Image 1 (tube, rainbow, N blue to C red):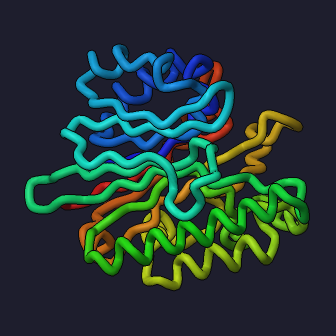
Image 2: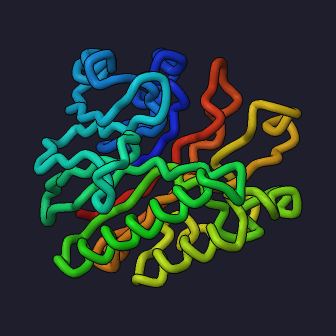
Length: 260
């Protein structure tokens, strides 16, 4: 089963690029972030005609997550538990059943957190603690799962072309990286890094200052696997080349192949 995460930065803007990538890469599951659309306005028919079941958790103009799956989705849940007052559309869960096992899909768009320090940074850290709690709950249930999406976290210096320029940014501040480590320390595996330990791999290049042409990127899109899911991992990669195409997102897809 091929599972990909892709921050598309607006479904309207990517209405041609996304189906093109899906046709080429043929993921069984695509977890999307920043669809920037209410559920009713998401162009689900385009993807249903391609053979995908579509589940969304959207809101007007910003945020929003979705799951596209060639396999049936069960037990859909929208919103990250832990704060009933949080109305930002950043999290969706579903179960997909493979040939031998079921897998819980957790699609997320973690808050950016800038400017830091400040209320937005506090929200980011609180959201990450809720995510850690959710991961711990799933581990207790012994459900194999993947938590995938735009984490807005640069885990280590080798995940940025110019790490020094990010030191005070919410994506790379010590508090953010500490929260990420606490999540990982539950026993999760960074799928891509487990297969590609060397530096120089990125999933995001800013639209400004020629970042793409200079390869001034960062790796902030991650697929974290529970121990049972990590045992099933067979491959991982980044579809870097689509960043150079017409009307690209500033992110590119990151994917895994898992024997489930």
